[in-house]
Image 1 (tube, rainbow, N blue to C red):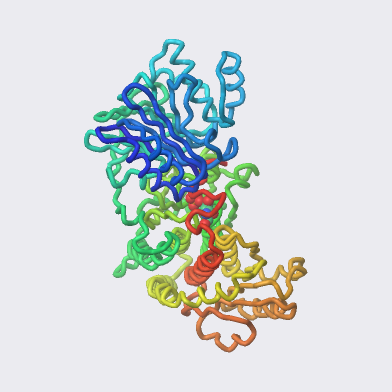
Image 2 (tube, rainbow, N blue to C red):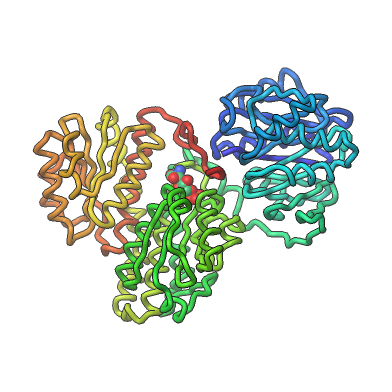
Length: 611
Ligand code: M6R
């Protein structure tokens, strides 16, 4: 999604803004721009396409100044173009604005402003904000008052960075339903939609809350609530290192993040189930035995890859606790009037903690008196702050649009939550707990083993890179891994791919199978192995090529398929953590062979803050 960066201080803003925007590239964008106050006027440069285009413009027409805002745009209202790029500026260059989110009532406001004589040049909703602030300012209000007045009128979601020509020492920021942080430096301050943009300048950040407005000067930050009362906030010290948001020698963030998985899972497991303890450390979760006993149902709601982690959570929680669990994608959940009451637990899963649909699902549950638990990566994110209980996966910044390390960390978290609930309810004895614990402890080294043999997925990708149709099939937890594998292949290799419950093939989709189809079958669930093998035979009989992902020890079935990726043996519960890795690697190498933009696939954004 769009990215925002802003700077005020003694240094030249353009270089800082461009550097910040580069660090936000991973969010996905199609155009970019900066506006810089030179002490007298606001100068602006904007360009469609990658940042290199903007850089060229900046080289040809340098602008200077120590206050500025920058933006990477992911088009919603109006096609990607120079004109539609942000910043947007009012007619006589008084007010410049960068904006993430959507102004829902912009057409009404635009019409009113046109009647007052305002001229619009872009198709965006954001331009309305610049003219509206301009209008209030010219009616006699000060800069801050004009911003407040405009915010009263606009409906929708926004993170805003705003400049006024008459205020060369002031940057105003505002937020509603879109993330925005303020970085506090020494004699300089920053704003950003995401921490990596400013982390090499400061580790001290304030998270702006909904309806708050910040007035930022080089040596002062004042934050106001919607009633214009000043609010005091605690500084959050970012603990992770800037290296975590850089490629560290890898060609792409995605492959770097795939390789980080053993370490992340090891740290997560050791933190939550310490080696010498028989207890699970559920810090952040206040849900007690009586609360769990009182539950009539659990919903697990998320989007995309996080939803797949949620589906695994559903299977495990239901199996281990016997509490009914319903998993749903957030964009459906929020509009289907689900049955929610005080005996409902909603578990939301989100890497970014900012996904608009997931956040709204959380709010619906809270309005209906349900308890909300969040499984989140981004510390201090909106979802983390609004949930009753938070289980941080602490996977570090995930930069690649395709989620990998967050997925396996989310799955690990769901396993720990399921086991902990079952223990609280007395439904898991200590032997079973110890078995699961030792399986979890062995997962990192088993993933490392798979990673060391990643040449297998590379060779398979080279062999099958011409495939036009890919089916992933599996049963039970293998079906969920199939869904994740299929999503990865679609999003980064742009390949048509479907995931099917293996037993469903014969109810329709098998009609599509022929000698040009590649089928990837996941068979890690021992009790379903023979069933899935029958389905493999069905697709083989129709000419499909089959790659199987199976546990070591099942070598004898290799002759039934074209290729096999064997993964180390593990229990049914932990198998998805291993099976996920070959599907991630296969998608990565397929995309590599096809020459796509792996870290920033077309049309996609890292953090989807609009519904
Ligand atoms: O930040 P979230 O986990 O809430 O994001 C949810 C999805 O947008 C995300 O998982 C998306 O599907 C990824 N691009 C998948 O790789």
